[in-house]
Length: 328
Image (cartoon, rainbow, N blue to C red):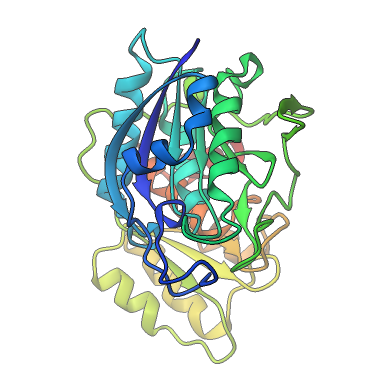
């Protein structure tokens, strides 16, 4: 049997509520990895399972430091001959961000699978047990090797680059609006139909083994009536990069454009993304290009932020940063 390490970080899958019908307002990260494994004895029939508690928190509170620690720990484990894959139990709120970051920083073709739940462990119809069974099945599947970091939720398999959370409560919340799922688990069988073509894991150039901190990058969200206050505040706080979550195809509010241009002149890298949830952002208006604004391709703002953080570890040259966004 293959040997799979379960790295637990908390989240709803380890959540506890006051009653079996309480599906909101519960405490995330209330149960340990040992509790999780004991509650799903069928895992022992799929692989040799061992657990490790990295943290036990609501994923909305994950920090850059914890993200780095998780990536570094994954690389340590995957380098061991007695580890055939890693399954990470994780809260759903920021699962897509962690999956994308790991997709760019894990240095192994062994399977790495993130899994969580939309209902706490105490719920009468908890989705966590079957999700984790499916995640382990995916991790032991030979076809999962080399697929990049994966997210398994609700019987579907997604690539870490393209997956996103689309609903606050529905168990079918995870989707990949720009590409769709890579595969699924039906009748207990793992089936792949597609693969991610953007470079990841071993093909990605980002090395974080000795990185202790990520550059500050803030997201500025577009809205009617916007002004420059948040741009100025982010720059004053030491932001080295800004992601502008623009309306439509990354459109910039007229009252903010000058502040973003001034940020570029001061050495801050500005990347345009979109708040719409899907679709590609292109280079845009000629004056935006002249002012030095970059564009995120089809990465949403939260994922564009992560790629920009990694890019800034190795370059501040805008043309080089733009190439990274078109490459990854």
